[in-house]
Amino acid sequence: MITLHQDAHGFIRMNRHFPSKTPIAILFTDGTTGEYTGARLNDLYDTALATFRAENRLDAKGFSRAPAKTVHPTNNVEFVPVESGMAP
Image (cartoon, rainbow, N blue to C red; front, side, top):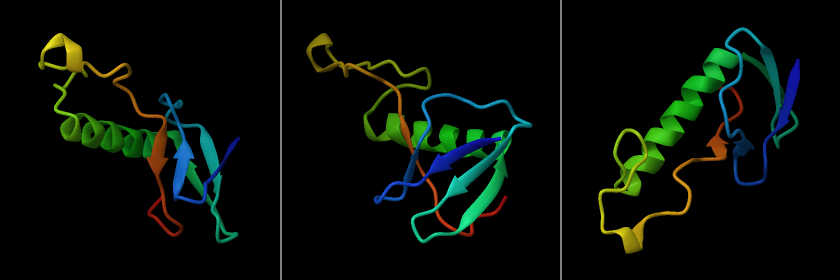
């Protein structure tokens, strides 16, 4: 089992997909603990990544179509928003 800790801003650090059947426990800042599958957290990661790319005007693969001087150094997310009591 993998244990992740929510930070003070409501995020967990997740920079890749986890195996879909792996149990993952999240310790929330309010002291509660939730247990989720890797598939559920992978869905949250994909949503956060899509939001990041849309806000930064990147295409579906993470490439910027703007002139070269405005290309972002990283086209990835490392922090995923989570909240206590979310659906498993």
